[in-house]
Length: 250
Ligand SMILES: Cc1ncc(COP(=O)(O)O)c(C=O)c1O
Image (cartoon, rainbow, N blue to C red; front, top):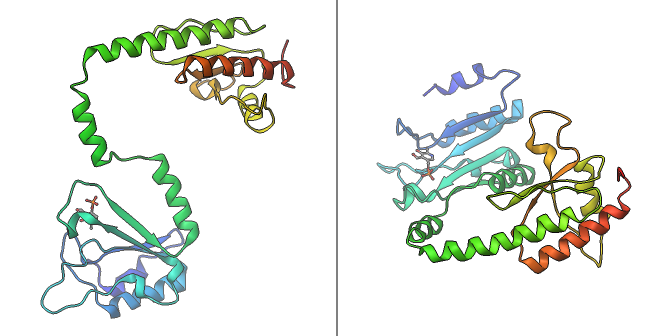
């Protein structure tokens, strides 16, 4: 590990944070209160984050005491603590940990990442293993239901003037062509500006599935995971929306 005097020398205009792992993996080094106060001064001077991974904080020996970065005054908004149950409870593999900060902006941003990048929960793993024993009859029933749902969507869309929907052979999506100028605009308009009987439909603009810019502007992806009655109402709602959409092309 670098000596305390080395930390400042490593700071450049691109430096955003100092990260310490205390007690340290792999060296086992324990930072003292005084050493952390040196970092506190650097954090203040250069307006940096201090990311402190303290997952081993119960593992401190020979009468030493662990001093948490969370106790450092005046830099409360700069400290981010990383913690985990995996060392404390000898539960490596449960993948449960946390990030703690008094900085609300940091926490808000972290939550967005947490929601976007999911890890498998333990219950999910247990359930997935049990699911392998599901009898074949389940898939026959589900298959029949999805054929009915697909038919509602394909037939329903093909009845709409100016729309075209192919009949897909698998999964539970269709990409339909609609008489619209721009699918991103249309999908947003459906959510923000349109309602029919106090309801609307949520579609995915197909433009996002193409790597070529400009493709898919008159196409939307529809997922038919609703029951047949709800799908019928959704198609009706879509039909009504297309009648009044300002970017209609026919
Ligand atoms: C310093 C440190 N932080 C975090 C972790 C990871 O913990 P988790 O099991 O929650 O992923 C480890 C595990 O080796 C570690 O050494």
